[in-house]
Image 1: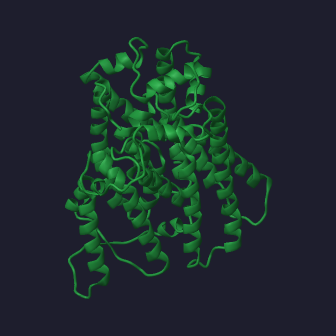
Image 2: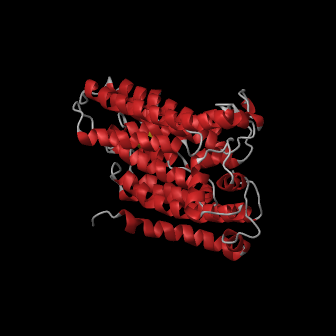
Amino acid sequence: MKFNALLTSVPIVLGITFCTSIAIIINPHIFISFFSNSPAKLFFDVGHYSNLAINPTCNAFYPLWPWLISKLGQPQIPDDAALYSRVIGSLLSLISVPLFLLLLKQSIKSYKITFLVVALYAINPLSVFRMIGYTEGIFSVFSLIFLILLNNLKITSKISIKFISILISIFIFSFLLSLTRPFLIQVVFSSILALASTLIINKFQNNLNLKKYVKTYGITTLMICLGALLGYCIYGYSCLQSRGDFFAPFHDQKAWGKQLGIYPQLFFVPLTSADFTAIYLPAIALIMSWLICISINIRKLIFATPKFWQLVLLFAYPPAFLAFYGADLKKINFSDKPTSLKEINLTQSAKKISTNYVFWFCIYFALIHSIIIVFSDQKLTSLRRFIFGTPYFFVAIAYISNCFPTRKVTKLLLWLLGFSGIWLVQYWLDYANDVWIG
């Protein structure tokens, strides 16, 4: 049967609806407050965006989302703006599901992995932020369109009309994303590192034309960076005009207590389980990606099947997982003694991630968010929603999952999906009680 993103998204949307309905049954106040503008449900940052929709000013919150709310809903008071932001954000969250399916189906052969990863993106607890008036909804939709455009670029030595039109579109969406939330620093590093990684691996590949690759993705990286830079410059200039400070959004964040520093306790003593996994999972995914590329291009590595208790450690205490699973990898690859460890082979799809610009861009984008927050905020404010509330990390997980046998990966994704659904219900209940959820 031919893949249809809209039809495939139906059971995922039903899953979101089911989890949300369970939460509403437990606490009906969720439904009442969500669709009411009196009293206002100005949940933390939603209050700031709602006020900006009525009275635009320069501060740490970027202007595109409140501007759209003001144009689409034409609210008269912040309470109305908050209601419109929840409704519009929820619609955008639903739109992101078929977009994500369409993106993954372009590169991921396994229908099961595509479906389960998108379901995990849609039903994980941090998906709440895409529906309660934050920027995650619009940021995810713009990001997915941006990644679909990147995915449709073909390595070429000729500058065709199609190539130019895609580049212009990539520039536009990079520009829009930069006006939605802090994006410039993250996208500059992730795009440059993605290009560098693919070029390093390209040395060991004989089937790629280095000159064509550099021309295609070098220009692409430049357009991404310029689009993001222009977006911030426009906002920075408006801040310069109104407050005399081009870097006011950054200075406002510093006023919240954020400052560069080394906080080693964050790597060993979890503040919350969600933040702890958000610190480690992008780094673990990057390590796994490089091991896969080494195995495919330089020296064949044998991957040990993680034991159940190791998978528990992966989400309960990631440093212990790194220690125990790393010891297994060392034993199975570098020990002459026979072991009882079960091997897991890579699939043919593993060859494709080595020089896949979109994959490396997504994995670095998630990692850089983690690095920035870990080294600037002892409270890890917003870390979990930056990692799990947007699609980038899940795109990387889909590509990595596709490198291993589908049957083994499917079991793990199903367990995670069930756990995420339960946790999503809990997040809705916490939201109703004005508890900080990330």
